[in-house]
Image: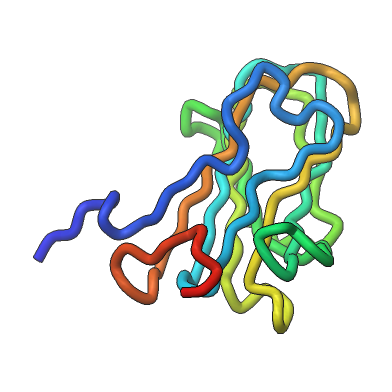
Length: 157
């Protein structure tokens, strides 16, 4: 039986679209990977040829984001039009700094088994490095649900 993409993947907005999505220090929503095998976060960067942001992924204890620790993850950069697709790169807990360039997509992959023992929750943290408005948003996709309809926001499942 054919399953549609929307039936296989849970989706959520991690950071809503904004005219300056990474102003100052911002944290995305907190998500739980207890019921999924992988999360993909896509940073969609439109206008913003000056500003840069340091991106890290923080594992934490719960939906409140308690006791966060930076963790390693994988990232790929490509132009928004799908051209110039970079290599998938494994990063350490220090993350990366976005390019001072417009129309980019950063795809971050995080496997559930990359989270530290006892921390099945995580969020994206952006810390502005060079001031300059970055128009953009962050989308979260979750794959490999333990059961169809796995709930992203229910910590009791």
